[in-house]
Image 1 (cartoon, rainbow, N blue to C red):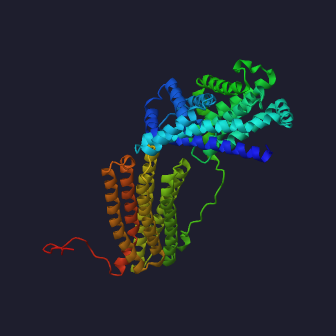
Image 2: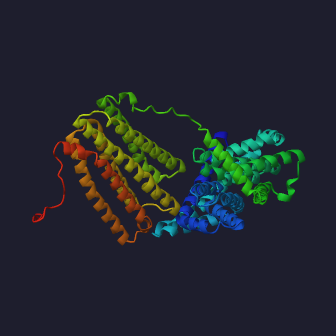
Image 3: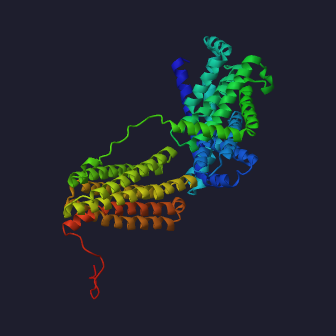
Length: 559
């Protein structure tokens, strides 16, 4: 077999292994995510319960990194205490090692059985838990199949003439072997995949057991780096648990590597075959870190939280402070001062546009970093609105024409509406995103399209309203109000279609009903706040009625 064909086979087998692991994790999260979260809230008050819960989560999700990221989000939102989060992750690491042990057994006959059962559940049932369970079974079958492919692809390495020289070099340089394993694990983003890859090479007598155990320590270092790097832009509360895991698991692997280099122990107690030594060494290491880490969990949490706070205190990238258009020297010239205040209001519009355009992306892919960024944008809106209000108040102290006084009042109302729109996004829509994350539910395809269509309509109307700050065009103002009326009809249609899905007992619609309806309501409220920018323009042109109410004594003509 040529080298190019060998690498192609290995790459394909590794790709299948990574994809299959993701398939299992996705299926478990969608089928049992709600139970995991409710159980997490109720059963982590005792260290042993927290450890056991993490152990079971890792077995279900097939990934200790997934457990770490999930727990970091819960500690960040205050759902789980920091010490409990550290202990859960410790249990998750041991559970992930046990998963690798189970998958290392010869279970070739299970592949067709799992494929048949999984495909049957996935294709023939409409109930979501069974549907996702079928997905997970297919994923497990693909993991076993990928391991067969890895073992077959690694077979020709036994006859390689250059391999002994490479292995001799690595065996004499444990630090290089350790770092290579750490780098490969980080690239794979999966300790399970990395351990199974090492075991597959060892089963073909390609990788000696002693070298394999050293590389197992590198796998644990590489795996412990994944979550801290993925959460590097999150807030301190979200980063502390991944950093605590890095302190325990990463530092533990380095210390154990130093001990092995000095004492050169015999690894025969881990198993007679090299692949057994690798798998059992991985379990033994994580069991050792668990036992040593339990009494140190509180101290580790405090240190990691301090490190997270310290790193957050020095921003990685400094952005220049925005220069305000609210020039105090222009206050004696009301016309110029009003123009300055309008420029600042336009900046508020740009921020609202950014927040509103991103909210549906966050619904689809909610991350702590994206949520935190929206909150910071709302803070900037609040500060800018307060600055504009104070600036406008100082303008009114000067002598102004009636028209300028009217413009000043209208601009103040616009800023208030913009600030309220930002509050709706952060105080209403963001909690809907967090509720969707906590419940691990998904909108139906039809429901998601309806929300996107409704959101797109609100975005179009918002940008029309923003234009009014610049042009004050009566025709644009009429289009804004007409669009507001059309959105009201669209809301009725959206609600009706949603209720129809509920009557059909669509499970996803039932699970996401309150989130769906509340999101539509809040988007409509934002549209109403922004559409109010058109009212002063229409009123000035004499195109606005005083009331929609019918006067007493008059009956409305039937449509």
